[in-house]
Length: 196
Image (cartoon, rainbow, N blue to C red; front, side, top):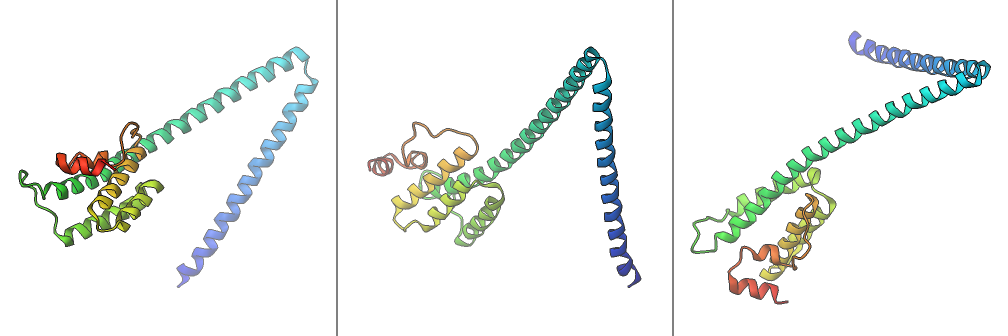
């Protein structure tokens, strides 16, 4: 009980101490800046110009270094995020391909059971909430809202594929609507899907 009472007092003390240190550093920086400009005004103009040029060079160098470091860290985070998206999206494409392949008598794929498919989609959507772009999430919602008509479902899956490709930086230019999902279809079915 005593520890619980002391904890808030300790946190309050740390907060006040942090604010005082920050205020002290801010005031010291302000005074240093005022003194610097006062000395600069009293100095010979050529010396003052050299000092201003040196300080400007230092500030530009430090600023440029900080911006570059920020951009590198941001790029690394985006690349890591892209790799995770890629794994996630590939799992969806593979699951959809296996479902399509299970109806092909020439292939030996087994379709997921309804329970496994529901669990896969639940897990996939959960991960998409964190990793997927808004357009991928919307495409998934449209896919789930598609009617039971095979063509509507295939077009909805194609839309999911397109949004996933776009999200990881791939172009869909030159691909007709339905063409990505048509890759897995028999020639006759592909012609029927793409004719409209």
